[in-house]
Image 1 (cartoon, rainbow, N blue to C red):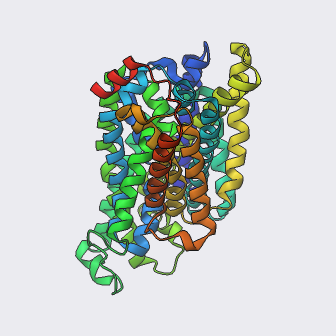
Image 2: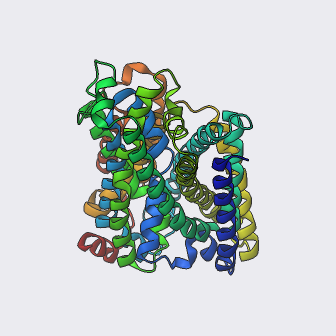
Image 3: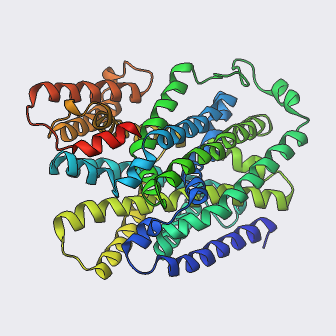
Length: 473
């Protein structure tokens, strides 16, 4: 058994050990399993949002983009960091204080049932798209570690087994406690890997000289472009406010202050990782110019000392674990809370409710594995999926700042418009008049929301005390 494999196996064993401990904390009801008993302090909120952010796209995906477009790929993590700041400053404490569990729940509470149903559909799709990309990155990592045993597809299947298993055992407590270890491992591995890679190739200047001409590899925009980078920031700020992962973490905090401060500290943890992975992607461009871009980061790391490469690759895999577990849990929560319990079996017992949650996580986990085999381009696929959160964020922001414009049907029609716009973007090239689908999503969703405000006279049911407390922050 190679040193790299031994390190990863030890890490997997540690994760399952943590999950078995977390299982005891998650016992006692769905609140403990899904929301960690609403007991996450500031530190646990911080590592959880960082763990959610620093996944496949923030490591393997950033290096993949840097391999073709330069250091500017690191702005992806900066965009996620900005999203965490905005969420912390505007909404995190409010989600906790409102005692909500999902965005669809809020939509029905203040709008109508149709808004809840359509938003569940959209949010589950988003969760599954992002989760599938964690399997894609997991396959890249394991096939690099042991190519004689793992094919790319075999690594994806192995990753899925671990991700699903850990989530099923201890719920959010598994993710929360595992993220402490994962983030430490990620920082050790990525920093050490970057330093050793750059040193081994003679320094940044030598790497810069060997990169092919034609791209501003170390420029602030690189081969990406300003419109795309701004699009990243808009996407990540948009999704940070209403995607189920951030919402579930905020709702699991001990109180509003812990939720707010946890997101702000998490933003600091998220920021540097992208640029470090981008540097390793550039190093891979010099050392292995003909490899598949997705393999850039795993390939460059495997050229390091066996112990260091094992730790760093385990760290990258840790990033996938930390993200995938929270996403799977969020997808299960959306389906069981907003579909099964709300419409199919409202009187379900607590014991059966937990069983259904675990079953949903398992089924959705298998579904995301299938989706992973269809994905092409980690960051590109993820950003298109996350663009769908625009509709939910538009509704949420209007609810906060201009409730007088909110109508009972606003959530439903705005969400439908967001879904249709994204479908058209994918299949009708003629509508692609913007640099990124997020721009079209915002234009369409805001326009539809305002149109509904003009045509529908039935106002949304937003209590006065909720409006005041949210606006005052």
